[in-house]
Amino acid sequence: IFSMLIYISLGLGVVIALIGMAVLRPVAILLGAEKGAMLNDCVLYGRIVLAALPALLLQFEFHSFCVTAEKPKLGLTVTVASGVTNMVLDLLLVGVLKLGLTGAALATAISQLIGGFVPLIYFSRKNTSLLKLGRTHFMGRALFKTCMNGVSELMSNISMSIVSMLYNKQLIKYAGENGVAAYGVLMYVNFIFASAFIGYTVGSAPIVGYNYGAGNHSELKNMLKKSSVMIGISALFMLAAAELLAYPLSHVFVGYDEELTKLTIRGFRIMSFSYLFQGFAIYGSSFFTALNDGVTSAIMSFLRTVIFQVAAVLLLPMVFGIDGIWYSIVVAEFVAMAVSVIFLIRKKDVYHYM
Image (cartoon, rainbow, N blue to C red; front, side, top):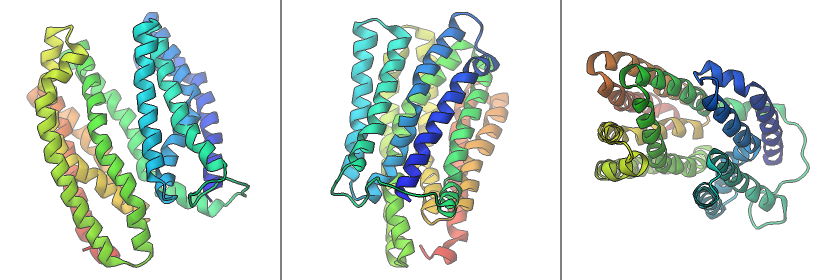
């Protein structure tokens, strides 16, 4: 199954990359890129990054397989190496060689190649893990079950793109180009903070799945309890860190414009309260995925990433203006956390984790 999934992901990545390159220009125009420099930059950056898409898919897939193969340190090492490569190449290609957008795109693409193909080479050779790539055959039922179990993550990524477009339209309406720039900075920082929650959920999911499959209900209860405490403590630290770092981080990204810096700091200080709820919402969906309950996980993910965010970003700005857009992130995560708690209570007699 391991080999089949890797080969299918690699092939699918190539197909999606080719389709993406073919439709990139009309899609960029549809999303508002004006003809000229902006459109050309979108197409240039997109095509370079799309060339590394197969490696990016492998990188995400190997995150989970490294844990399953009892090689979590390999996954961590590859992730860190990929991130460091991106930063170093950004400095070299953009800062030193002055390649601009092309350099930034190449740095991203090369880092993705490292993240995807280093573990691919490792598992292709004889190794000390529980998994090794080799010959395989098509297993439709296993593939279907895998796809169904990942529906929630699929919805998260699709909806993330849709919601981002909606946020950008609202920001243009209420704050102009500065609003879009501030949102871009906040999303970069939010991804860094959210990665801590995502990393924990990805790492703990195989443990939850194993204990559920083994019928070890006491350990399931223990995992849920300890995870809740850990996420709660981490959330408090993240809130404190975000509030303290709001000014310096905003200054690093947009310090060249005083008005934009103030707008970014304001959004940062409001949005940081979402970290109190975000971890629980992310873990709740992942927890049910690990229990092989893809339907519940998909519902939770869809509500969190689409329904709640869309409703909040459309309604709150009508009352609070630009601040309403930042508040919408907090409100959406809070309601998503509440839904997670409701599902955990309703399903406790089915999976015996309470």
